[in-house]
Length: 293
Length: 267
Image (tube, rainbow over all chains, first blue to last red; front, side, top):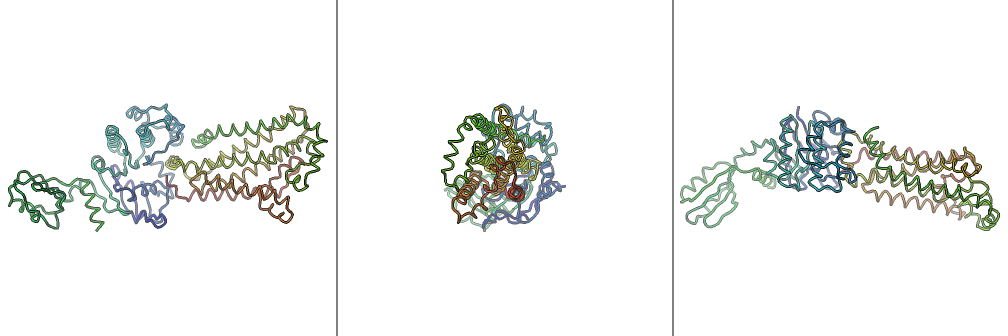
């Protein structure tokens, strides 16, 4: 059974169509990255999933249970970390943990996580730094070892060390059978930890692929240094997008067949050439450019 | 005790104790000074007789104001002080509890747990009801042992009936505020609308007693049905007025629940 199945979910706020027939499937036991720029509909999708807001149409199933009619059951499956963390200012971390335990029952992983994240339990939440608030929110989301973790931009504003700690925790959680649905606009982060990725643009899912499939999209970055000035016209073609050019250097993105550009290069004296697979960012931009046409 | 229930009780502990202590101190003050005022009742009676009849009816003063502690408390406590404190405690409690949590974003914490919106709403609602009950007891029920302490005669029935009408009045205001708290995402809007509306109702009730042509205004004012003064003074409860207060309790609390259950909470 898939962890999350979102089918044709639409949501309108006044004249703004925030989500337009969003459909995606999050396989169980994987880390699914949900990508999109600000305002694309990531947080709205998560709020619908969490039953904070109700879609105008469509359905969301979490491990087979309906997110709206069976919201309490769905919540028992998941741990949630919001983008804007709001905690009870006068409560200490210990009081937050105690409250969660009073609702969800004893948390087996709490002590271990507190130690791993070096979280001080005795400070009131209003006096915690943003990093420590994030640590507390992560402990609260994960300490019951839920079946599904829903994380809305979990590493925003965190230092690289803490980001790395969070990636390690998420990988370990996934390896123990947990599923993670993580929204982000940090492409490097998604590429680093996710198994699957969904891309949302203007309220519509434009791609939902495994990271491997995205890498296999047959997009290459070609970087060439020439001995002598080259003719840019020689490198104008439908499948070539110029990224950078100078008198002796050319960087371009090639979609599909590489042979035409290699044949052109064969007519020049080349000092250095580097051909790499496109990064997730390039693929991401490709989706955006394609959809924007 | 459920986690949410305990959390709500803890969060309202200080405010409840403060309100209860404040109103208790007022009752203690009025009860302790009553014997002194009673000795001066003849001179006060003359002053009250010289006031316009409509005005003295509105504020409830008359020849029997100092006849016993019940009449005295009914004027001193229930003309202005008790309803104002009851309105404050009712509106601020539920305004902060629902709209306030949405405003601060902490409602997201509750909604992300397996609590359910019905449980969240009704737990918050009933903890507020307990708070109002504590406030009613510390002001009205507590007046009886205080009266005994100062050797004053009183009718327990009158105090108990007064507690019933006062509690229902506060609940009606509270339930209306609960509905507004479910509609709006800012507690200040709940306070402003409740405050403005109750102020208008209070003035309407006073004006209806002073201007004969505007007498019908009183029927639109919740303060007309708040008959604590008469109940404590006469030991008789007007059931029609009580019923008029019970109906909004049921309607507004349920409306608040339906709205809270259906609304989009973007936290």
